[in-house]
Length: 169
View 1 (tube, helix red, strand yellow):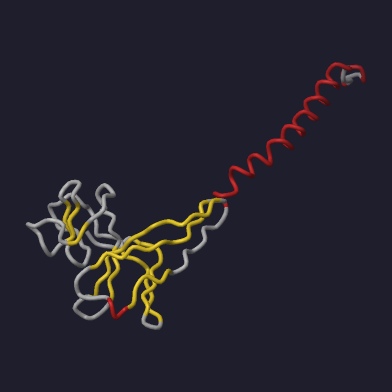
View 2 (cartoon, rainbow, N blue to C red):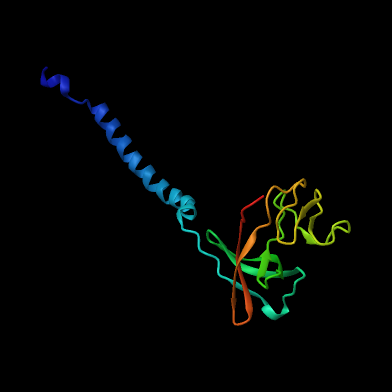
């Protein structure tokens, strides 16, 4: 082949040059936008701090609803999120803290909310029932037990963290 066959024409040279420069400029403009959009997904989720909710001496064998607030961070947005828990002492004297969110459709369950079932948690949305320990009653809509809160007792105060799923159905 001759040298003439390998030559790049002026038109091809300008096309290659402008395409390359345009690509670098587009990448330079798009990278900060992509980083802005993807950064919250890549950021490691912060563990929620435990929040003081009640004095251990005030907790009885009867489930009591306790409302509290946590500091929540969603990407760049920080907010105070209201939460609640059903807290009681079981037969052994251990503290049990259950989430009030039904595992069927996310409604709020109430202790003794149904007169026909006075010693159970009741979900009014579709008649879901849970035992006092949070386990779902077979034959009712919920397919799993109520979530339990991470908890810690320090200096006579109950601290609650994040609600975590419990095993068993």
